[in-house]
Each structure stands twice: as C-alpha cells, then as structure tokens.
Amino acid sequence: MGELILPLRIVAEPKPSHRERYLCEMDPSRNKSQRFIRADSNLENLDYPTIEIPKQWVSDKLYIRVTLITVWSDQVPVICIHPYPIDTPESNVIKDPERNTLYFPISQDELNRGRKSFRISLRKLTQQELRNCTSLWLLNKDEKDIQRFSDSRDARKFIEVYQLGKSKLIFSIADRFQASVLPVIYDTTSVYSQIMTASTCSTTNENDSVVKCVPQKGQWQGGDEILMVVPKLDKRRTCKVYFENPSSNEKEEVNVEFVDLKTIAFTTPPCPLKTPDNGKKEIPIAITQSGEEIARVSFCYESFDKCLNCNNASLFAALADSNMDGQSSMSTTCFDERDHFFRNHNVQSESDSS
Image 1 (spheres, rainbow, N blue to C red):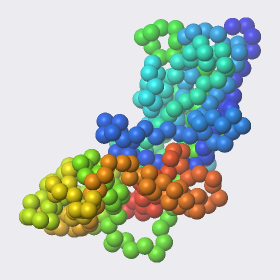
Image 2 (tube, helix red, strand yellow):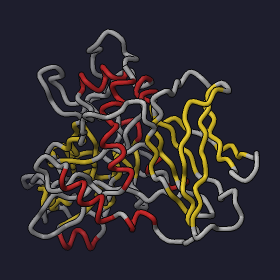
Image 3 (spheres, rainbow, N blue to C red):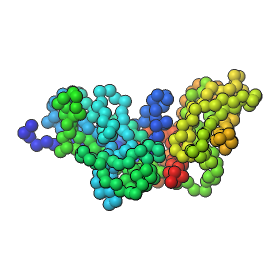
Image 4 (spheres, rainbow, N blue to C red):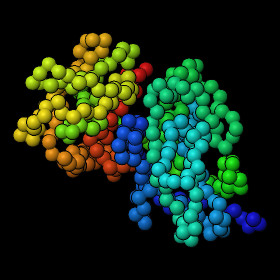
C-alpha cells in the first residue's frame, strides 16, 4: 500500500465513568444479562464506542484490534495490558485472552459506512484472581513489565501501583494473512480512547456491623441472584447459607460463592412455603461459619412473576444522579439495585482485603 496509512478516529468515546462488575453479576451461564461499556455523549447518539474507518481500507480480511490497557503514570511510566478481562458476545471475533485483546471482523457494510461500533464487557477481577497475576504484559511488546512492588501477591498494592481503577481502550486496524495465526496489527492506525475510571463512593456514618443484602425480595419460584456483605465473614472458614421454613424446622442449604473477603453471592431456591400469603412471604436466611451463626436476614418471596428491578428503576436512577459528583451518568449500563449496593461497599471491601 503506497499511500499514507491514516489512523482510525473515535467518533463515540467510552464513558469516562463506569461501575466495575464481578463475574457473578454478568455470567450468561447464570442467566445474568450482559453489561457493555457504553458510549459517552456524542452528536450521533451512538450507544457504544464507535470508530471511523478510513476509506483507504478495502480488504475483506480486515479486523479492528481492541485491547484494554493501563494508564501511564509517574509511578508506572509504561503502558501495560490491563488485567481486567474484556469480552464480547459477537460471533466471529478472534480472542487473545493472554493479551486481553479482541479482533473484530469488519463487514462490507461497515466498510461502506466507514463506521464500526463495539459491544464490549469489562470484568473486575477478585482479590484472589489478582494475586495470580504476578506481572503485566507491555503493550505491543513480547515482554512483561518489571517488578514494581515487593510482594507480587499483594492484590491491593497491585491495584494501587498500576491504578487499575483507570483504563483505556486502544483501537487498531489489523489484517489476517493466515487462518492459523492472529491478525497483524498496523500500529500506525492505533487510536487511544479517553480514560475510563471506575466509580467509587466512600461510606460515611454507616454501621459496619450491619449485613447488607441485595435484592431483598425475589420471585416465588426462586432463581434470583443475591449479593450480601457480611462484616463478620471470614474467608478462611467454611461458609454456609440456609433458607429456613418458618412453619417447620426444615432448612435448605444453597451454594455460596465468595465475591471478595466480605461479600458472598448465591441463588435463591424456590420458596419453602407452598402457599402464597397475600402474594408475599418473608423467609429467614441464616449464614453460618464452622457451625456458628454469624448473620441472619429476611428475604421476601413474591408470588407474581415480573421484573422486580423495574419497580425500583426510577428510584435507583434518581439515587444514581444524586450521587454522581457532577457526572451525568454513574454507570456504563442501566443503573440497578446491585449498582447502588456495590457503590456503597466497593471502597470498604478493598480496605478489608488488605
């Protein structure tokens, strides 16, 4: 190609503020809806980050390389591959998990329009996952960054040094010459997005001994995903969660997953009572460790079948707007009850993990 190779241009930037999500909040295998990075305000009202493709590119084997990267700082004066995984549900996308990179094929229609949008999800790693990430790949290099702090398994230090609450997307043209290898990147076409910052909110005047459970009600047939902060939780001890039948001594144990040191996730079973009481019934949930009860909350089963989050959409949207510190939108996705829950406990959870 003899002519000057032009870089891509971003016509819809990703939002500068987003809410980090763990796997349990976005796992399709658990019937969780996929959450995507949303576009910032733009003249064309595009929903997702979008780039403009120069007209000089006409090959039917072209791809757009999308990689999540860290942000340059005085403490880390290099650009690395960000460890928080990005993904997409779109078909025919080539994925390189080791370099946290997605290669999106460009259709003929997209070439004709000169535009391509991207539905990309971003997942936050748990403390344990970060401890297994001892070093980061340097961007566009076949080598890893130097050791920048003494204990490579110190997850909190990892987050602090590399400022993992901040990230960027890099977009580049790539061409695939052989089906057996990854596309070749044209680095001169690369363009970097604006910085995306994970929103956090410190808690004030809160009782640290209070158990937080979201949502607090669900469908009679069960299947709702519950997130619960338990201040007395000790990850080193076996944790069990029981749904109790108030009319008998029976109780049902459910599988539990640790989200972080003080947060657990589990799925509700069907209501232990067979007959609805005026359409709803409160059931005790007991949390135990090594046979000792450490927390107890009530969960409300409702007999009607509808989206419970829809009832609170306006309320939580208002909460989001009122706590934005000047931002027009808190999240890259629709604000829901779990967003409010994690906003209020994200900072505390990171503190507890140290």
